[in-house]
Length: 284
Image (cartoon, rainbow, N blue to C red; front, top):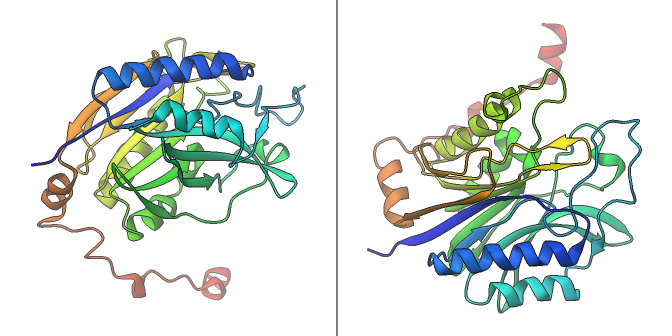
């Protein structure tokens, strides 16, 4: 039996890259001491997220835009060394900015994803990505997504159909913008965050790592709730609303085989039935 020890982080990050790298270094060190081989860090952990998601908000210049082949991503890879590390950042490419997540080891970049689905006013700050894909890593075959991407079942399904064994979703998911709960643990947006994590794991019968920002930034109060979910939708480890690492260990191949043995959700699909006739819908 070959097991994989994995972790998802809930932590607070801001605009100062040096401070962010100090936090990343601390989390990587903590994970390494716990013999973690796959570590997921939050969305926008290099440079911070947006100050607000309101259309009329007075925003700053936003996070620093980093090149995928630039010194900051090389620095991240150096910190990762033998570990596989996933981290969110603002990507500069083709004269535009993307909300992106990168996967690295000490050998360099293994994969990169640009956020496809943009909530509220986020499209004023970033261009959107246009695909989902899985890729091989020392920790197994991984598929990545960012925050609001996980609200769409098609996102995780595309990754699972591309062979992803582990879905990694990095987020800067805040609490509710209206009528927020005094106790963040009871916030309705936190409940949605947790439901999406469990549903995406269960419906695709994959392992799910969910990292998230914690604390506050600008007008946003993040729900934390980093977790590891098994292919049956059961939460194996969870930070709650506080910063920390959610750590779990699984035999990935065995967990997937067990979950899919009798009812295989990917195997039992009937894609020829899942059609939508816009004309019929318009006249209904």
